[in-house]
Image 1 (spheres, helix red, strand yellow):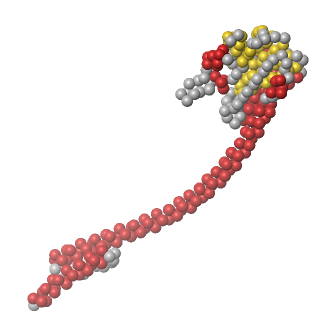
Image 2 (cartoon, helix red, strand yellow; image 1 turned 120 degrees about the vertical axis):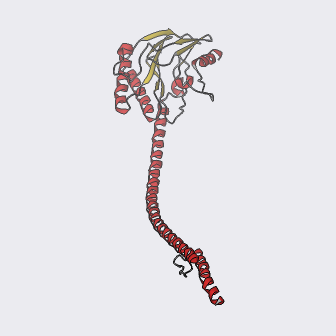
Image 3 (cartoon, one colour; image 1 turned 180 degrees about the vertical axis):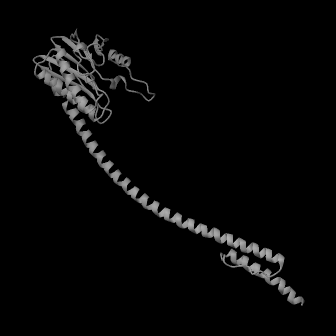
Length: 307
């Protein structure tokens, strides 16, 4: 009887141990067979409930994992498609950049081609003239030209707002308009600058509204210089002293309004042997050092007076 009772008690306990090991190994279907002993029955019921809950959790996880895998696969396909589209766009962008670089290079070379050459300047016997331009971007908006006709020398200097292809094209337009009017021997400053403004204004409205440029013209003949048009100050160096001539009242910005006739005026100054005139754009005076300080007009004047 004692042996039978001990077996009756230990059998369900061993079964609980086997079930716990089975559950630990992942077999969640193994059930505890209740043996009729109240305390062991309670433990068995707890094991069975735990296994059922674990099975339900695993089933929920399997469903969630399947849904997640489906979403990941779908997202992967979307990402591959997006990546292909990005690669195509990058290829197009690289091609467009190469095309734009080529166009800007052509515009830059056109700018350089229409500047007066040292040979052109050496043919002007009465004056020693030097000119220099270096753009900070691919295409700048600065303009200068020297034209000799019938013993009269016309020097033009201007500055288009901004830089880039549009500014470079407008600079070429200004140069062409000025040379055309000189070729037809138009000398009246109001008609001259008024016509240039009309050309610039009409083209600016088509091309880039808001673009404009400063433009001053200096006509030299027989020791006299006639200045007309609005640009930076004209600096006249006489015996190491710089005389500043403001051009603000001699014209108006080109291309801003359709008619500037009422704003155009002129002044005349004498230029004697040994005296100099210095023309510049704001690329000089507004150049910055590493502390963001501007070079400034005063420093330019100091250099001119020293040298």
